[in-house]
Image (cartoon, rainbow, N blue to C red; front, side, top):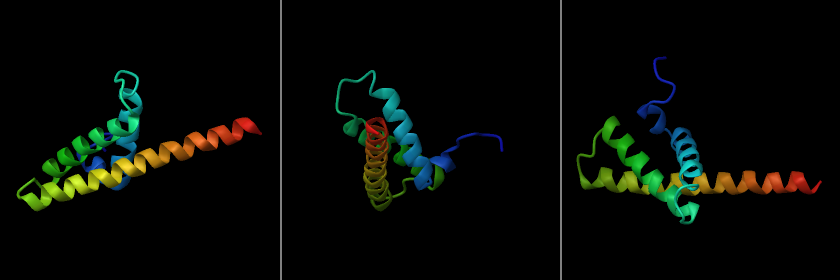
Length: 94
């Protein structure tokens, strides 16, 4: 295994969600907008790059599918963050 993270990793659902979550947490400190919009932008970049490196963006259908997948990845990333955040608040209260 030469690379810890590769474009093939970002091409999987889990890798894309993890990458989106990590980069969103990094960028939200520097950008003054809602982190949900940052997650959407990051997921679009990740999915379009992963699609272009893996199979290419040959036609409109592959671009639309990459954008649709980016919406799913952004939703999963934000949902994961909200779940972890609420679990942390639950633990603090006890």
